Image 1: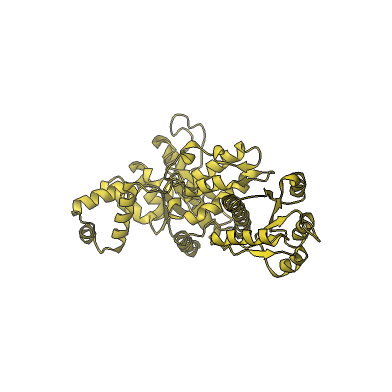
Image 2: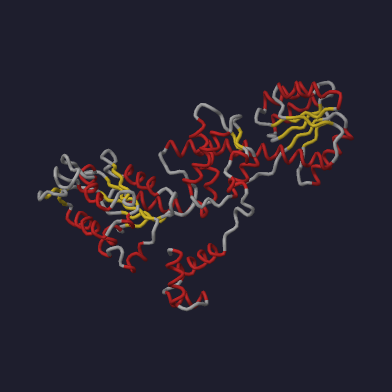
Length: 440
């Protein structure tokens, strides 16, 4: 989100103090509007938009309280800071109750003004960013789109949308927590099967001896514990979509049966000789590198090409840092229930700098936890897990990650492995071993 140069108004009828403040702001790159006549403030508000207004409390013919009320009426988005002498602190506190953000006690030196202004600007930036994010999220949620502004992910979603109405099988690849199931739902909702069943199966979560029955069903007496006939997930998904998550963990014995369903659209329940027909759109997902599984012989090549009609590759959250602010405020709204939550500038900085190795799922869990702990409605660093707060160089990549990114870039521009190995300055065998290690 682009940060605009702040616009500050300073109102003080003592010209010497006014000019001194102006010089201080100019030295830190802020072009402030200086106003020595409080009666001119209304005219300025009608012609300019100010982020912050520093207003002296004791002025004539209008005092700081009157100016505060005028600003709140004509420019409610402007943050007002009351400047006051030592003996008027009680009046300044009363001004805060009427809508001022804070007060600055005179006399103050350059460093104090600088630090105070930076703190107020950080608060203003955060408030402004939240408002923009809420507006952007509202438009996204209203259209049912996945929350992102990352170019790579948008391109992948565009591919998904264009093939959604076909019957072609789709393979979604991505690290754990990147939203593979969400993309499968996205495809289903954009297809002509949107009003039909969407059935999901986690191939890694079901024991091998039960997976065939889970997928294709069984009849009574087919095995111990089969007390009645039972439909499988493919039957339940008939005319709709089946989502096979963690397809790379599918046992070899089941792979051949799945291949048959994809080829012929028919199957038998476990323990039955009756052939049943289904019309099912298959979307599969994996966080493994299936190309390597093919080379190892742990995954059937013919099944892979049936599943891989169109391949969607989801970037990790580390590769889409511009989405972190959107997701932060999306989850904050999700878990706030009836309360209003905000994120302090310190916590906001920590959250945006962290690498999120667990991707969107980790971010969601962190915000849910923080919302439960932040009893006063403000999420502070103390409400975040230790591994996030104590990450000394949260944005830094490890040597392995740098190496992985470099190899990935070279593979994308090279015509073959020999050329890639030459560019990287390694032999072909080393490159293939690194490729296997990093899952490229």
